[in-house]
Amino acid sequence: MSAQSDEYPSTGGHKVKRNKIALAGTALFAIGALALAGCASGGSGNEGDGGSGANTDADAIITTNGSEPENPLIPTNTNEVGGGKILDEIFAGLIYYDADGKPVNDVAEEITTEDPQNLTVKIKEGLTFTDGEEVTADNFIKAWNEGAKASNAHLSSYFFEDIEGFSYDTDSELTGLKQVDDYTFTIALNKPASDFALRLGYSAFYPLPDVAFEDMEAFGQNPIGNGPYMIDGEDAWQHDVQIDLVRNDDYDGGRQAANGGLTIKFYATQEAAYADLLSNEVDVIDAIPTNSLPVFTDELGDRAVNQPSAVFQSFTIGQFLPHFSGEEGQLRRQALSMAINREEITETIFSGTRTPASDFTSPVIDGWSDSVPGSEVLDFDPEKAKELWAEADAIAPWDGEFKIAYNSDGGHDAWVDAVSNSIKNTLGIEASGDPYPTFQDLRTKINDRTITTAARSGWQADYPGLYNFLGPLYATGAGSNDGDYTNPEFDELISAGISNPDAEAQIEDFTKAQEVLFQDLPAIPLWYSNVTGGFSENVDNVTFGWNSVPLYYEITKAGE
Image (tube, rainbow, N blue to C red; front, side, top):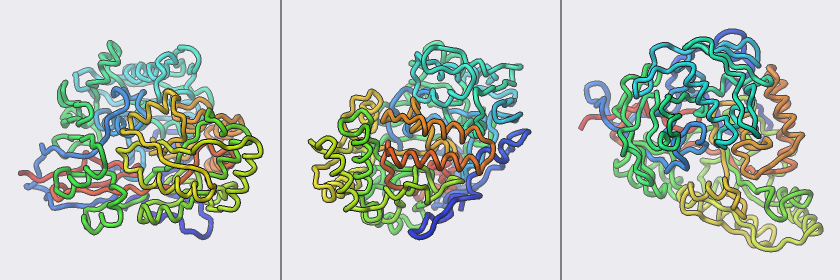
């Protein structure tokens, strides 16, 4: 089992995780090169009856589940799992993360850190995009500048804010990026960011070929990458149906595909995907419908997957919603949190495949703690919840219904109903779910700020670090700050933590930052998710990684 295999927290005692996924600010940032990790075979490591060796068809297509991407497939404008799953297969960044979350050099030959504010990147020579263009330092510099450009308003522009020259307000060049030669460039940060090298495996940092800049929108419909797979022709993306990828034989990195390609099907429901799995019509899925959680391990046997992952679930209440700003809003948020019986819901609805949250991050990330001061607002305390709600009513009487928006295609109905009922029964107010047909429909409402209710939210880590669960979601102006939360104290603590190369001091700052979050509750933490999935009888070598995504390139399939 991978480094994620440590059991989740028990109900007693306090814990701080150590020696799991390497915390940035330690070995990664010693002066010298980013270590080239070996390819580990962590995760589930399970096998079906697909066979190996002579029985394996190296050109077999692996079928899996997915969702229609929210936007065209442009790395810097994709921050959701549907598009991210595709981008991670068709692009190669400077590094990638193995099953255990360890960084492995991909396009990078080495990444040298002079100090937490200056890096030198040397890339491998002779690597190409699938249109034949050679990958050079300039492809990274141009792509990052495009993603950071204020007028483009790309969803992942936040990831470039630490580079010198970045601006949220005006179009400006990332002056901290300097090309030394065709295969070398330097990165100067505007402040120390001790985990910056660790971030470089995230999709926002992928390179782009020159053709992308001729028509970015068109490029996003049929992107040309440099990863282990490539889009299978101009009609490969059938919107709302599936996308077809084929192996890129010119890819020369550590993720060499052991199969011929992927077909990612955009299922309308998790139930449909699971039914196909039971009949061997799909090879691997990374989500089990809620109503099948009590039985899927019996139905799939050793082809079932249930392991911890870097996924945090919550619901976000926008600062712009009536009754949820200022002192009144703070009281109501705390009351709602204490009105939710997380223990009962995770056991009854999820059959123990979720663990009640005790912070805003994930137990599989080094530095996690279950004893952050203020976390008592996550305890189920009906009397305290009623008291806080009454205090808020004294400021401004509540009217209307509390609703939680969610996407119906994601298997969220049962838990949203359970949370709503817990709130309703505790506080004596009307509360219910507000379903949207698809994830894309919901995200559109959230992103354009036309949503008028709370909304389900969650975070699947981009890279294995505590900061990734905090900065991108709650820092002022961050791209995934769905509720427009802002608190200067939080911003200062996050900035201090990420600037500190000392791991223990960094954790202290992040802990203090979470104390602020527990006071303000921009999002209501619910639980940590295991990855629950499975695979068919036709495939072998199935491993689920630290971030809950299968390592598709390792999967083998028997010939027909």
